[in-house]
Amino acid sequence: MQHKAKKQLFFICFKLSLFFLLSQHTVAFSLDRDDSPLSLYKNNFLVTGVENSPYSKNVVFKFQLSAKLQILESPFFFAYTQRSFMDIASYSFPFYDHNYRPELFYIQAIAGKTMLQAMQLGFLHSSNGKDGDNSRGWNYFYLKLYFSKGGFYFEPKLIAAFLLDQDNNPDLRQYYGPLKLNLGYRWSNDVEWSAVVHPGIKFDKYSVETHFNIPWKVFFKHLEDKTVTSLWLQAYYGFGETLLGYNQITQSISLGFGIRP
Image (cartoon, rainbow, N blue to C red; front, side):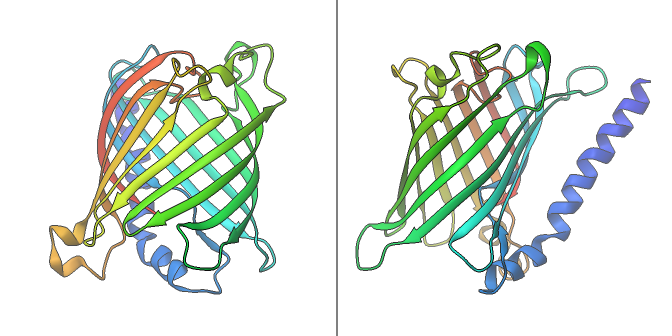
């Protein structure tokens, strides 16, 4: 049984890795085409590392997939983001949580020479797809602003939540709060650092997630036009990395590779 579980884990990781590697040219082609309705939305990555949380035994494999689809050549988009967590230190390597985030939004570019580049209005449903005592979910409207100057960018997001799961996570909004901050810097060689901050309502139930990614061309010059993936380092501290454990502190550091929008 243990051998079978290890084999199953190998094929899961292999298939996900193969998907990333084989989709590189397709993704790059899609991003280069102005008429393509499908494109990346948020960061896409596969990482593994150590984690201190009540739901895993310290070694975790996780991935995030995210894309958006333009609706009828309009400024309206449908997007889908999924982040999944596997405890690879436990017997049978269980996925202990999945976070599903379908989203509908409108985005408008801002003309003129200003730091404010665009404004986005949207509706998002976030759920872990479980039932019973492990069910977690919430819905919210949001306003997101995109600021950039040189290589620096700053993206505040104002959140108005409603229809929370009152039975299993009545205090969820206390942890995620009405504000989300995304900021980062991209150097001229495309190396990028970014951070996502959830202050929480009273700034005591906060979380900070950081990403540092380095394109392979930095290490291997001959890959400059042949790959869109990057070496990916991720660290997390605070509450709410998984919906299942939104009220539990998680500390993690992971390494892998990914594709960024």
